[in-house]
Image (cartoon, rainbow, N blue to C red):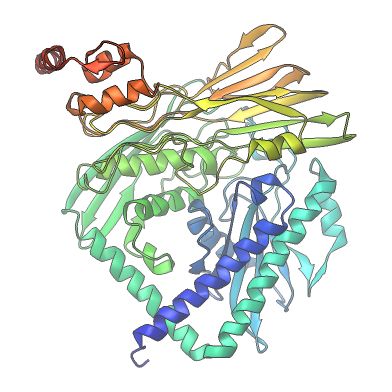
Length: 582
């Protein structure tokens, strides 16, 4: 292969990216469910015809799907037979390169002039795939069958025609089946858009040049990742993170992360982590690996995404732990919750080596909340799925972002106006979770509070969240962020889940409500080194109380409006430093 002109390489790279971006937009704009159309919980990409390796992924795709869709496509390739133009496979089996059952993957072989050139794949979060509870997030499941319908790779579309028998099996096993056809057709339409756009790209530049560019882009991505890794000193780095509980046994699950830097590569080992658990917080191997990939992409965002990005990252299979789930272990919490703890363990390990690039732990939960019932006014059943933001961790560059999206993706909270229009609920509170940002030289961002009240009918509420036992960890002397809180108000009393932020099948009637407070990010650096004027500004904005300013930051405020008492603050901080030294 002769040297490729850099301008041509950049054009082909952008062209492949644009194919994926247009698939993303087609999917979002035609999907029925707010979790896809508003929250953007989906992804699209192009994958190698033989190996299933990632070639390109859309800018609007969830980072956690970067690795899982590659592994998922590989699983389909291994099982695919008699491929024809127009075929589309559907699969959601977590153990075949997946996440949880609600993340449904479509895989389409792409033919150019009669030859298989690549696979086009996407993932969309369906609001329900059956199982014990509406929405699929069963906090008490002890086997995967309780979580919903599990599909191996099967051809839903055969030469462009939907198989009505397979469709009927799917729709007969999920709730609100009449509403799923919109998402199914949107998901297939996105792949069809990708097919047209990729055909146009190949028509313009030719198969040979495009394939040469794909190989070169992979090589360069690996080189760029190794160049970034070279900034880390050789050595062994250790970190840890905890999951509150598995939803069944009320004990924390520990993630032990050992990162070894040697010869330009990184090796990740999770030996010593907790064994497989009874509840749904097991993580399948594809999600575990993808969580490490996305953690490194957070650290080095400049490196482009394709299969070459992952070459310098070696992950030892964590067999015998809850991070390598095998059938029939339940896994509904793996992608949305456990994945974020895995990423946090990577951050915790590497922050001493890369203090200028890393940060304290973010909120680290997707806040999965599902409400299912029957709306008497609309005369139909519904399943509402809510995700929520939280605080980002502080960093050397400044304070953490407030109400940011989760570590694993770009998914955002659906607009409450859309939710109130679609479902019989009222969001009668949406506010800042004051005081939840972890104290530090750079404080963590704040979580949010929301309260949703059932307006009519009856419903069942379920939630799988995390960081209810301990808040997101601070870094380099910073304090932990505030914890996740759930309070259910029903029958005139407040109910708090025994597992803090995991529960299921909570019966609600008209007028009863669920209030959620999401975590704040961890603090970065010694809180006693925070600029006192910034602390005073936070108090003036209502982020912290006067008492918290004193207790957390050693800043004494007097007068009205509150001003920094410089002498008292200096004495308070000196006393705190002396006590810490003792």
